[in-house]
Length: 405
Image (cartoon, rainbow, N blue to C red; front, side, top):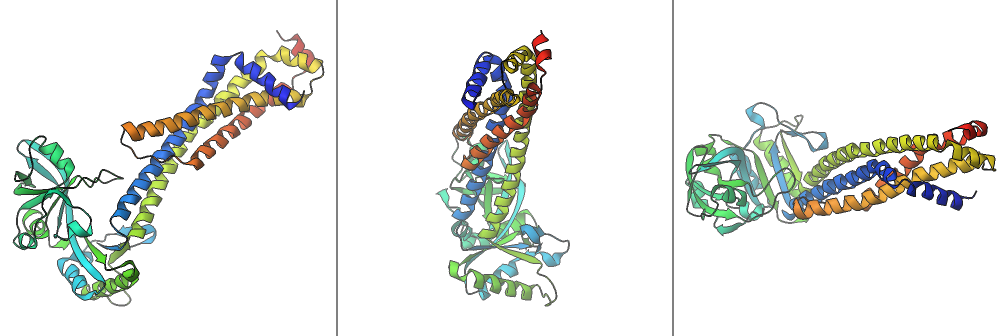
């Protein structure tokens, strides 16, 4: 019996038990579909966050308090010496020629209230240049001015999410909201960015830095300083000069490490990609477990099939079938189950990813590599878990098989 005859015989045996074959493939179908969908969602989220960060511009430097360690992790230590202050931002703006704009920021979560409605959000205290440097334009209304920032004015620019949840059909412009118990006038609404990754840029309130520090939160330090460099070609120059200025401002000796960290867009993108990849592999690994479960199901059904067809095996061997012929027939059945299940799973995985993007507003990016990997793994599962039943069938004794009822 050649391979083609074994293949046709295997197909005939599977078609004779269509429902059982479909139920046997179910584990493979679910496993492949889950792996493809999880990887597509993970890569889609990673791509969306990366694009969002890149949209801010490639010539930005971000200064944070705390010493940077390996893997892009910033370690915040206790003590006031590691805090960034307004004087640090002013020194960078005055002494670093390559800095086009310097934007100090202080942010903290706080409760925002309008009449009887409450919303917990991120409140960012900053300066008017934030709109230009961070690319957060006002879709309606306006940003606050330098005069309002200097005079501790209680004015606010709110994100689209806050406008929808607190105001519904009311125009927010000119309305009064309470932030951490204090009254603010809404003077603008941020342009909608859409949620990506772990942070929603539409869910934030922008207020003057002086107001945030003195009137709302009672602090004299910063969460972050963003520096827009004149051009990409001067990034290294700006980095070194900022480091020099801040070390001098913080009175650090030559043998002391920086008590601040400076990162560019590439560093942030790399950190985001590594984090997203970790979660993607974790989700794919969990989904791949169902492939193994499906493989065990195939092995169980194939063992049952061998037992049911013991007499058939005996007849085949009695008329001249070799052990390799019998083994090949049952192995082909197992592989066909896995491959067909893999193909159906690929179709469901692609459809599921597209549906989540269309109806669930989840970014997804279908990877050819994930499709090929899932299909190959499904075929491997069929071969691996089909070997023992096929071997068991091939080892059947002819006399005992013919006597089997």
